[in-house]
Every structure is written in C-alpha cells, then in structure tokens.
Length: 505
Image 1 (cartoon, rainbow, N blue to C red):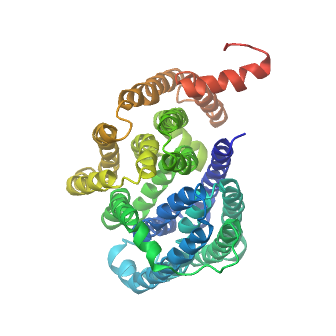
Image 2 (cartoon, one colour):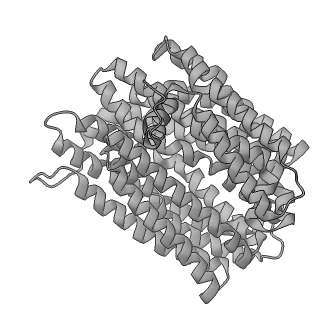
Image 3 (cartoon, rainbow, N blue to C red):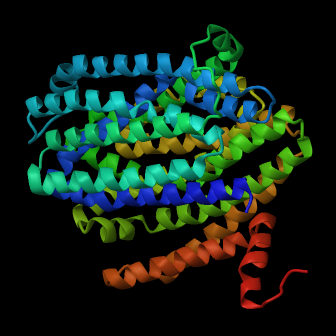
C-alpha cells in the first residue's frame, strides 16, 4: 500500500474515531450538565475557533514546508531549524490567548452570555478555566501540521485516537464520580490538553531527520516563507469570521439554552467534515511534493481522484442526515424536545458543510502551488457581503436564518471561486470537476436518499428506525460509489474480485 493510501486510511480511522467519541459522549455531557451548561462547551469550541485566526498561517505553512523540503537534498538542518523558528512565536501567541480569555471572563459572563439557571459567577469561573485549557490545546494544530507534512499521519492518528478516548471518557468519569459541574469538566480539559500536546511535540521532533547540530531560531527562514504565511493568515482570519460569526451573534441574541441547541446542531453538521478532512490531509502534502517536482500530469490525476473520493464520502452522508435529521437526533439523544428544537438546524447546516467539503481538494491544489490570494480575496468579499446578511437573517428568522447563510456562503465558493481557480490552475479540468467529480455523485446520492425518505415512514420503533437508517446509508453510499471512475474502479478491483466476480477487464 502506498504512503498516500496509508495516510488516507489512517486519517479516516482517526477522524471517524474522534468524531465517534464526540458524538457518543455529548448526550452524557448534557445528561450530567444540562443543555444550558452544555452551551458553555459550545462557547469553548467557538473561542478555540476564533483564536485560530491568530495561527498566522503557521500550521499550514509548516505542513507545506515539511512536504517541500522532504523531497529536496541537503535540507535536513533547515527542517529542524524551521520548526524551532516557528514554534517560539506560536507558543507566545498561545500565552497571549490564555491571558485574553481570563481577562475577558467577567465581561463574557456578566454582559455577553444570556444565562438562565447557571449563575454568572459559574460562567466566569468556567471561562477562566477555558483560558488555561486553550493555551495548551491551541498549539496542537501547529505540531500536527508538521507531522502531516512529514507523512507521519499514521502516527498522528494513533495519538489522536488514544487522546480522544482519554479526553472523552475521562470527562464522563469526572462528571459522574467527582463533580457534575462545568468547572470540573474544563479542569479535565486542561489535563487532557497537556498530555496531548506533550505527545505530539515529542513525536514531531523524533520524526525529524537527525543532525548533529541543535535546532536554532533563524530569522532568515521567516523571510523565505513570509509571503505564503501572510496569505494563509489572511485566509485563516476570514474563514474564522465566516465560520464562527453565526455562533458569536447567536451567543448574544439567544438564550444560553437555545444556543446550546444550536451548538448541538453544529456538532452534528460539522462532523460531516470528518469525511473530507482525511482526504485533504493526505492529499495536500502529496500535491505539494508533485508540484515541487513539476509533475503536472500526476497533479491532475491526483486532483480528480481525490475530489471524487471526497464527493462519494461526503454527499451520501449529507443527504441521509439532512433528510432524516429528526429521526437521527431522536435515536441519538433520546430526547424528543432536543430533536424538535434541533433537527431543522441540522438539515440546513449539513448541506452547507457538504458543499464546503467539496471545496477541500481545490483548496489543497491552491495551497500546493503556493497561491493564497484567491482564497483570501474571496473570503474578504464574503465577509463584506454576508456579515450584513447574517445579522438581518438572524434578526428575522433566528437560528434558522443564521444557518441558511452557511449554505449561501459555500454555494458562492462552488460557483464563483472554482471557475476563477481553473483559469490559472489546471485550466482544462474545470468541467470534469463539475461533471464527474461533483454532479454525478450529487444527483445519485440525492435520488437514493430521497427514495429512502419516501419509503420509510415516521411511525416506527427506534430500533426499526435505526435499522432502516443503516440500510439507506449503505445503499446510498454503495450506489453513489459506482458513479465516479475512481471509486468504481476501487470497488471492482478490491471488493468484487474478493468474491471471485470479475466485472472489470
């Protein structure tokens, strides 16, 4: 098995397991803490995402530079020096974030969050603890980027699987056996984050090629990468605004309880990204390798294969979740009230997330060529246009209006950014991307999942509902996989041949 395939498999294993850990433990968090206190966990996730804009593009830059330098001769010392050069400002920014969260905790608790049963004092204490947790959790993306660029994605996913289990199971045990409070929950997040970051730092340095000379800070290395890093910083800031604006606005406009429902819907919808991100994480470093080697034909082949794989993985899951969101939530949470308040938000958000997932491979192609301007300018325009729209739709339609903006944003990427990108990169591949990589799997998955929705009634036991959902999901995935050359070939060569059925010459 090639390194690329191993990385994709490992990324899927890690992504599915960590996502499963989150989904399994969320109902238990709500059980012990209540939906209002769970809203604070949503605020914690929002803070992490917002401060991700201070990444300065360094994690993606490190990923790209490790992949590029790895195929060049005589760059061993430069690789080690680059990690040391970039990690120093990264940790300083992490310390700054921690201080900012702690200082702002009284304002957030008493003047921003609309509390109900949870006292403002409890909210303030929880947010102060969040500040310490963020300081250790935030640098993980930087060191993870380094391991991904070094093609050590199997190792990275083993660490993430172990730590996701440790973090989630430990939190439940703390809430059950020690104290069912948000303070206890976030205190455990600090412990888990310290262990997690320690493991990733250790293995990144161990994975770097050895040299006799100790790594050192080199200012000239910053000068070599500043243009790409600056472009990535701009993209990160804009994307953070676009992806977290709804939560910022809703945390102010809605009660903490209703914000908890919206946070729950976001968890479900954004989990869909776990089907696309493993392919992106494995493909991006390989595309960077091929671009550095000027292998345009191989770049084109990998671009389409990866895009088709993403579509087959994302679209069937998206349509099944969107069409059966109420049933899924009821089976998952065992709460009719939660399902009733959340299912429509899930259906809308998951469609936007599906379209966003389709953009992963075109975005990886842009980064592999070091072209950040298109994404940066596109996101600036999106912020200028969609921020007013977000405010208006939230005011008129509440959480549903905010969720709709996520769909509008990603449709804009698909129909505006893609044609612009293909004028410069792989100019003859645009229509193949729309037709084979997106349109065919989209139409087929919609028809199969839609047929399942028509045939399956709502008056069934939860066990029967679960069995029907499994059948519809596997049927939609299998039939959709037959629509793209990449996944169809894989099925013929790896599945049917195992049964002794020769369907492909």
